[in-house]
Length: 399
Ligand SMILES: *Cc1c(COP(=O)(O)O)cnc(C)c1O
Image 1 (cartoon, rainbow, N blue to C red):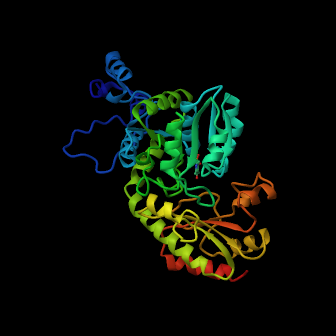
Image 2 (image 1 turned 60 degrees about the vertical axis):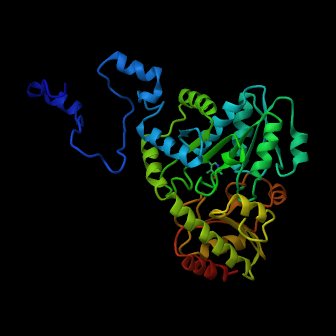
Image 3 (image 1 turned 135 degrees about the horizontal axis):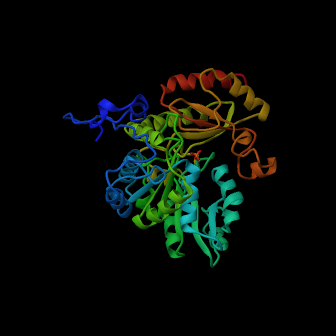
């Protein structure tokens, strides 16, 4: 079709058809090509219809899906041990999609109280507008969960490792509790990609990730993914497609590229975080280190069972003396470690939760959840740990 009228075609027509190339050579691209197209062209109405009828046969329109998104979903579902996955435009979109699939107007959900601050805002400011009520509770306290249960409770939501204090959720216990009460259990496993932890193996129903963090891992693509059984993911996909919570082909392409090194990167993140945590624990300027890989962590034994391959790349510590002023002096003194209000990059970064995720809380509220003015969060990168520690050491010396 492309060749037939070529000789007579005008500049305008040629320009409009630029890029139409058929690859007929033997062999195939080693890296997956980027399908940066919003829509597909067909030779017939039936060809398009057959895909509308059975989306597993191909792609029609980008808001629904494309080859890059499908490739990422397929690879991630296999790694997560899930029947199916759906990629979304952000981590928040994955959380929102999972929640509106599990609950609707008139329903109630229970969420762990110590979770990512933006998720708290999503639940309080947006889910409430859709008529979904949320109660926050300490999910490690079974009595507190039972007290929060209502006849219309449909789901519980928690994180594998909490932010920023890296508390460890008991996945099997929470999955059981959900099953006994006919709730959908939804876990945000952003801090523990599937190479470290596969929550579905513990009986959790749905896993969400902000792929923006470790999965993509290079601070250059926003995205999310939710995984679970086929039926749940099908319902979630219908909502995500209608609302337009779609991952872009480019971000999906980036995520596929990044999955290839995810196990290697996570190994280095975990080793470095443990080395930093152990070193910090011995420093006179430091009063407390929060890392599940340390024996001093309240749930170290649970963490050892659930995270045999490593405890993740996130840790936090408290300086012994001072407050906001001293923490800011320490952060300014760092030479190679930037202050970054995100996490999971290949380079080590620091964050001050009192001024980022928890900035909307009062001092009393922050102290009550352990996010004091003295708390610094570290996202351990994949550099040589000796270099990271040297920078921390010289910066701590200003305190
Ligand atoms: C960053 C983050 C999110 C949100 O992801 P976005 O891609 O920024 O929307 C959700 N949960 C956790 C634990 C996160 O760290």
